[in-house]
Length: 255
Image 1: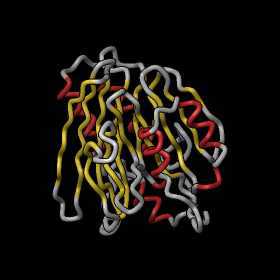
Image 2: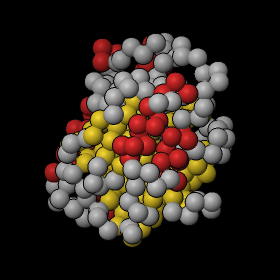
Image 3: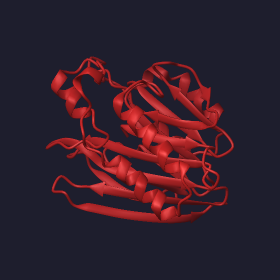
Image 4: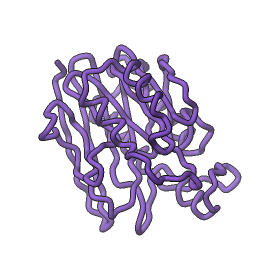
C-alpha cells in the first residue's frame, strides 16, 4: 500500500473512513479482497508470493494497513515480508498497542515500513524508521512512503480532498464514489514540490500522483472502507495492466 488517507472520529456516521491505493509490480501474484479460507474472520486482499496483505479488517472491527518506507539504498537481503505485519495482527486476538510493542522489538527484521493497527476505540501508528508508537487522536491523516503526514504533494492533496468530501452530508454510495474519485487522480506533482527520496527525478515524477500508471509498476488496487460501531462497508477495485477493473463490495455486520 502506497497511499492511505483516513479520517478517525471525524465523520458523525462513520468513525473510521479509509481510502487507500496499493502500488506494486504487476507481475507480483495477488488475490482480490475476500474472506480468507484459513482465517474466516479476516477480509483482505492477499499477496500470494509471501501470503501477507497490505490492508484488511476483521469481523470484530479490527483494522490494519501498511505502507513501505521508501529508501532505495536499504539492504533487503534476509529481511522478512512486511505484509506479515498486517496479517499477523488481523489473525491474532492481541491488543493493538501490545502487538506494536512486540513488533518494535523486531524492528530490524523488516525493511522500512509504516503500520496502522487498531479499532474504533483506539488506533495506533508505528514506523520502524521513527520507532515510536503513537496513539492517534481524532483527525484526518495521510500516509505514503514516508512518515505519517509527511509534507508530500499526494498526501496533502488527498487529505484536503477527503476533508472536503466528509464536510458534506451524503449517502454512503456518494461518499464511496467521491473517495474513489480522489484515489483515481493521475496528475503528477510540480517538480518544485517533489520529495527527495533517493530515486532519480523521473521516478519521483512517476511516483508523485495519487494513482500511478506504468507498464511494469502501478496502482494495482484502490480500497474504500467505511466503519461504524456495528457494520462496515468495504469496496476494492483491482486493476490489471490491460486496464480491466474488478470491483468487490462487502457489507459486514460486526460482532
